Image (cartoon, rainbow, N blue to C red; front, side, top):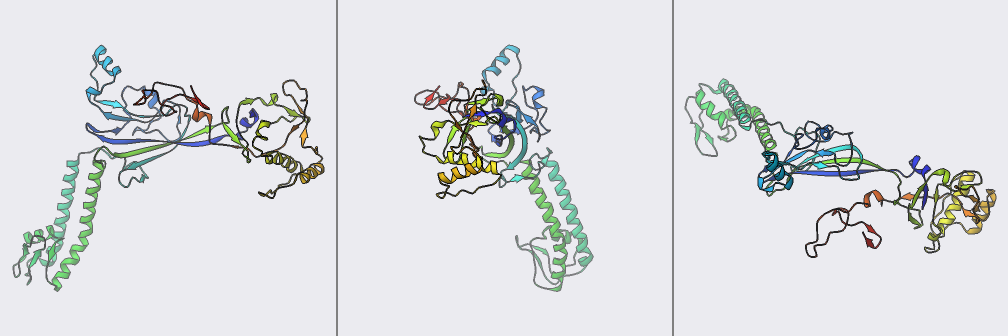
Length: 427
């Protein structure tokens, strides 16, 4: 199919594709991987679009080779690449124990970053903010000490409240720790501050027979139980965040997904189709002033191969072209149903009423010379769609890639950097 560049200028067949790229952070034998902006052996200009955490900013324009997410992985000196070994031997530089394993924009991708999603192994659900994904580094022992202090102060506060009710009194019933079976406050003994402090420590497990004093004690304890639960939950949450929710056996513990909007213009090699199986590939994009034009000087936007009609026996595309021209001339819309389409004599009648050629063909002039073509050509309007078979996603270059385990021949396909396929041939 020949296509006019007028269609490309007006973005008639332009499409926006959202490409998804994912990076997993795993726990290795040498330590956990880390997302960071401090990537070794990288030009600082490549890191300009990364935020403080090492993730690309939303709205950034990226090109092939740009870093989307900076990541470092611990490595052993035995796993050095040949370049790193040479650098160590020549310069005498001590190799670092980390390597650059960042997510990089692949070849052929030019676009804007539209969205970034953060996931953890906790349900692997999307996090609304990055605060849980990038926890602040702090000493867990200091935090535990703070939690213990909060526990002690809350326990002392509970002891003081219980003292206002029970201090100096005698209870006719034993208060027992139901877990250990020990007696916390014996019956008939004068209650001291020490006994009440012991009672506040075992507030969850106290057991005593029903009495008015029991309801008074439980009402006070229930007021403080929520505060104890809040401190306990916050400690568990902080501990899990500090440990980054690591999983065993090298599973992914965190994940980041970057979405890039890529705009594809109609290009040579793209597959387009009508609604009658009349598919084809764009063979050339021609300037609008070089395209054939009608006697009114209107250039044609697209030229279809006439051999696509007899081999497939889909004459419906020709009828659609006639009907589209009629509807455009009369300024009306038409409904055509499957297996109940217009007859040829009805279309001829409509052509006559529209003051168009009854044959449905028109004289067309050569865009290069200005001379008219010998035969008349069917010119009209047709629905054309672009299929998701774009040359930009298929054409690739051959590179040294993986080889077959058995035959030791290079693998095929784009993902394996294999040969480019042309029909039944691979080159």
